[in-house]
Image (cartoon, rainbow, N blue to C red; front, side, top):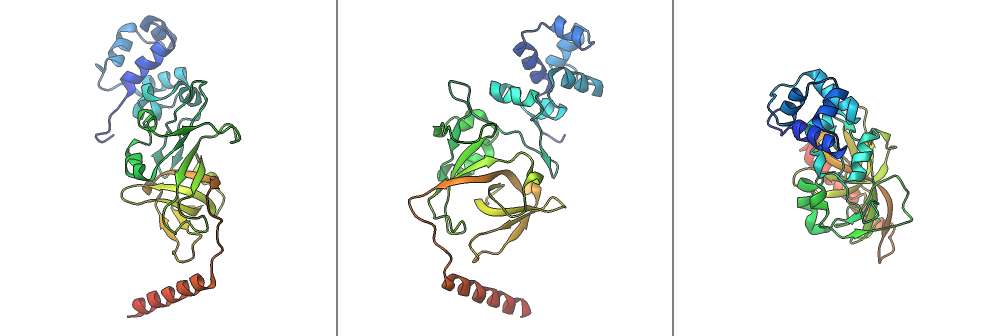
Length: 266
């Protein structure tokens, strides 16, 4: 798997100790010798057999992908139970996404507020609960249960008619292909690209069409691998009322399109 770090040995030890099982007890449950289990946990077996991965996956009810790729010790107990329920891996375009969360003292999910200045760091730390712990957190009892929500402030005019400076509450989308066409969403893009609020359509080839509500901005398509997260629009708060698009904005868009067409012909 290229140079990516593998967490299999530390994960199986973490999961065993989480269940308060001895090596001897676990080895007996999955038909291993205690010596081999000890070697696996300490990383002394450089090439575990495929059946080893499957045996641990079946016993702990966590996918092989997560056993290999995710440092499970950094996840909350609530998220670990979610993984065991089968909600750990969501595949679109071959990318695995496991969402990190934080919880309050009652073990209920927080709603984190992601400030504008944190955008660059969020792309690197979005899957790390310790990183998310630094952000302001809210408990919002009226949000739908069984979903993860996060708050993103808007910048720029591409998100019109939602005014700049509004706070959008997004609901995390696990399976992108479940989105209906032109669904309004906050899309977290990789690299130097911004967080964008767009109408999202997932194409049959797994590319994603992004359309702005502001008609001055042309729609464009990105690959699934260019996207880190998608948060379906739930609601927003603002000090300003949204304004309808003016005739002048529509005319400006038409003029811009004409200029682009002239450039293409030249």
